[in-house]
Every structure is written in structure tokens, then in C-alpha cells.
Picture 1 (tube, rainbow, N blue to C red):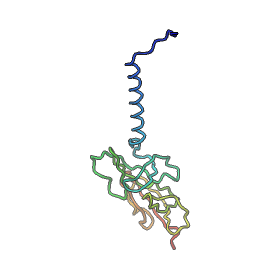
Picture 2: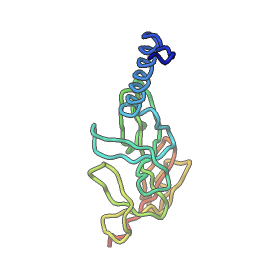
Picture 3: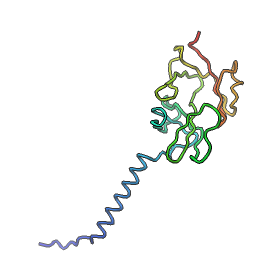
Length: 165
């Protein structure tokens, strides 16, 4: 017995299915491949080394925020400024990363991820950030000239070795 309800035309069904599939495909692409969300000034955690690296944007206050994105450039632009920047590339961009060092904290090398991690200050292998000088990339301003400077953005980190005797 007919219910009196008409079925939509086949072209409407095909159109709805096509729109849903296109949206799902675009969303999946963005989740899997698009790294365009990172911006200069944001902090990041990086897992892996070299071409196998995965970057995640994180809050700057946490211990996992091992890097700060110093600059973001198109691949057609020249590389990172002079300095100890870590370079990460994707299909569209070059990210220049610098350490997200915090004054008073200690750090140890994290070779697996080509980074530094927050560590206890009593380890002889750690460094301590004695002072952060924003607006200048001159480590000569640090006690004994012990520091590292970055020109973009201009910042210098004064480095102590608390565990060394």
C-alpha cells in the first residue's frame, strides 16, 4: 500500500552524496596533510628527527613546548636567518624554530627529537637559562659572554652550567 510520500529524484541523491564525500575528503586532507596552522610566535612540540618530524602547536607555558616558531616562510624564500634555528619543511612552508627557553629553568639535550627538554638542575649535562634578553641577539650581554643569540625575533639566552664543577 503506497504511503503517499514521493522519493526524491536520483539527481538529488547523487548531489547530496557527492557534497558529503567532497567535504569528508577535504576535512581528511586537512587533518592528515595540512600543516598551515602554525604561525610565527606560537610554541611547538616536535617529535622525531629530520624528515620524520611531526610538529604540534602547543601552549607556550607547558614543559612540552620545546620550540618557538621564530618565522614562517614560503618555500620559495631563502632559509632561516643565521643562528642555530631548526628548520622544518612541509609542502608549502619553511618553519624556523628556536628553543623556547624560560629564564630560571634547566634543560637537557633530547637527541631523539633534536631538541631540549626541561630537566633537573643537578645533572652535570644540563644547562640553566640564567637570563632571557628580549630585543637583542647579542650574547655578549650575558655574564662571561656565555649565551646564544637569535636575530629573528631578536633574543639572547644567557646560559649557565649548574651541574658542572
